[in-house]
Length: 239
Ligand code: PGA
Image 1 (tube, protein in one colour):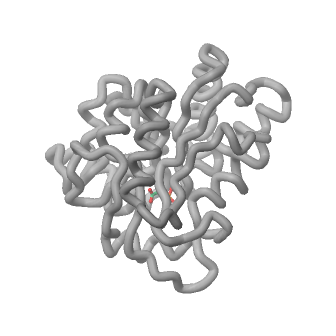
Image 2 (tube, rainbow, N blue to C red):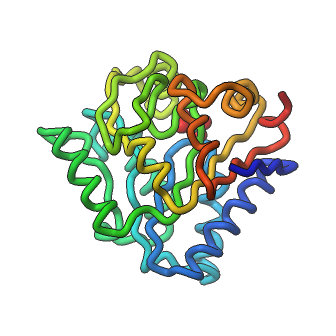
């Protein structure tokens, strides 16, 4: 994994947008997996602007959902799917058939994991996985202690994730379990981009990079990926 430090959040967002556009221009039918969360919002704004100017065309791409709060319907503004439709898919005019998201209301969530695993496989794997990092070092909802051999799975949520996740909801919401692609799918992605910005991420960035590669800090596994770049701004890099 390479590390690239940019001067500002704007530069970080522009740099990652450039990577996305390069890929999609070279491979218009790319399979993309992008996260919900505050980290990529600047990136999404740029991608929407570039798409509106016809500088990039996502109409041939497929989008895989990274994760979802189990039991939260996609109509809930706090759901990951709702976030992605609001800030990216809707503005890009992505058609429902291009989007493959976990149904967090599925009666058999394990079966739902197998459904998504099969779609990723059928599409030939993920070309580009972009990930924010949690305050506890999680990726998607691969929580501290995760088994890195897992593909999509159901997980109990770490107390940090339960607390931080409240920021997406207008009222206190019980978040106990998640459904997520696994570390295995992250490691099998052809290209991985980690993103971190802001001083609040500095401590966990240090732990991801300086400590042992371990399940306790799920993002540390990406250090072993041969085609991964960790983009961060100066604030996130300052420790
Ligand atoms: P954030 O979330 O981008 O809002 O910081 C990242 C995460 O929790 O994975």
